[in-house]
Image (cartoon, rainbow, N blue to C red; front, top):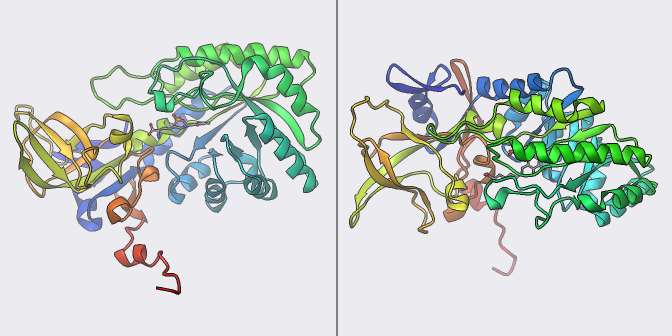
Length: 421
Ligand code: LLP
């Protein structure tokens, strides 16, 4: 459930008509609903109640300072994957003991930064990383808390570009080698092994792959404990999917996910961490865009809008589906006609939807791309020198710009001429 609903024939973000924001801020613009973000965070938090747990928001999905602060104030931790994300989390007031550091390519500088600023744990992905971290921690007179990410070789049954739990993927260490690698880690003086980490992919629409992976984690916990490791923390990753289409099957609810976690891992008396990104932020955001032209082609029509692939990359990168709806609610008997919805960028890949049934729209009309709150703004670029688009946060009947649109001068002045030009 989200808070972008038609009211009196107009799409609203909570209590604000979306057209009012578009008028004040211009298009394209990302709009987030605070109530939806909080609702989704709390759903997870409650789903895990009764177990010692921490929900660490995967901030790669949406890393605006306002979003981070809102969630951190509600009690969320953060899952970071770079020094930049670590700095953003700290700037938003997240204490180090609520930050977990994931990723296959942590650099020495990033390790130092997190050890200095405080960290709950590093989720280690390889033996070379383990050796480097131990050395860095030792040189700083510290001991780094770590979990080791195992690759359970489970098919997440999602898009191949966002599946991470099969043996051919670059993530984690093969579960078959876990025993040896944990022993190696335990022998390193700069590390303290606190648990196991697993993340099998994103936009999972079934519980079964999670359950398969977590069952393997439960078995591994027993085995590693028998081998003398004090396994007390399990980081279960993120990945629970969201409904992108109204008609599609509905992905499992956080409550069902929580029940499954309790069933598979609850008896182990471990602290549970989860790292949801999309489920918290995805349906808490929309991208609002204006129709520039309606163009008739040979055998097909094109709706050219002012948002493009640089603003919302998912359709051209993954063939992802986003619902696209007019801001003025069409009546139930409005005829729909198929149309290609495209952006202004000079590539055919700059296509949001092909032959999408849409109500009649004209130049100047506004549309909203739904489910754009996760992996939207964070994946945007200034390709074609199109300024990064602004982000707006809504609370009830108020809204605030939480990232302004840069001016052309802002963009140009980032470049520097060498002295010989
Ligand atoms: N934890 C780890 C270690 C991850 O790699 C990810 C996502 C998450 C948590 C959060 O997963 P979520 O709950 O959001 O599914 N750009 C792609 C998604 C990439 C996901 C990468 N890792 C997209 O737009 O679909």
